[in-house]
Length: 469
Image 1 (tube, rainbow, N blue to C red):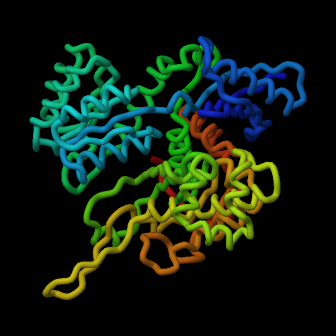
Image 2: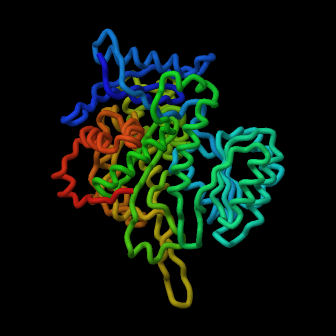
Image 3: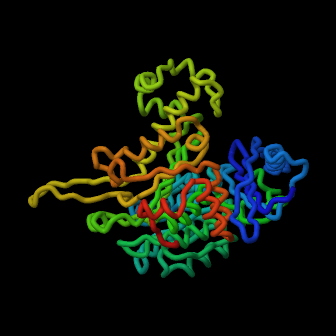
């Protein structure tokens, strides 16, 4: 059997492959999914796990042989896209650079403000980043910090690629310093060109380009190009690409992905003019936050501590310590499933609250003054669930319904209870669709509409209408 596209999602523990056909003159469709443990233990690296996942797909499709026209991939194996971010002022250029890196799907291991210290440089040596993002200064503002940091990077033994997204006045100087020292340097628009604006999309796109160019140098990934001919994206970056694409079709949205180790939230929305008028700092159109302490398996105890063990026991009727003794990544009994469902709901709720902006108040001679801080989500119409916990676990529909009503006190910059509509990535293909969207956006949209069970009619009914980004 020959299929048109196979998209591999190479995770830290599991490799998933999705198969799609795109027949001429007909709608594209999802064929099936296979999975296998990710392997990075020898010179062939992830290709062993990838081949095993393809065998699993053959079994799912019940075919003796399987070939494909093109294979694409997303990856969070080998630590994913490991980045460090360096800017001038933490709440300005550093924050803007961090937003760009997170939106591209990076795992940020170090953020620094100002001139790099000796401690920062030692940390860089330990982290061994795949990519460094250097920013600093609004356009025609501070020049010294970015130039000094470029020179300090040259004192390092390692030479990862560097993206410079700072003051345009010193682009040439930074590039000359880095390239003369043996760095591959990429110049892009300033992420924080002026005090009232963020420009992170050019940086996000170049991060994807650099990731694809250098991913085969990561441990265990050296032979990935032997099998993957098409695009390779960081998995969270692929989900963001898909969220961007869906925004252009259905309007303002949020995506919640609860995993075994982390919980990610993506949002694409401009927010409201009213909130914008009292916002203390600009926010990007598309934002991603990743909560490293909110995972339903690796960080189960972290969630229990945040919520309270007594509360979890009250909700589940379980003796928590006893269940944790045999707790599995994929729950294998009713008690484990009950605990996983409870943890997933709390992880998602906490992650959404952390992602959302809030109203703040100050008191002075003129009385109480309101202002807004963080991401304005008040115009979001759609809440989309993806990832294993929110696409495969029993009771997932009820979890999403509860999540849409978390703004009961109206203190968050989120819609009032009952306003958002919920959607599920039933086929669990959001990252795959994001990878496909780079060259085949219409195919990706059609596949996601099938997976989300949405039609043009219910988009119109919801008032969802976005714009291409």
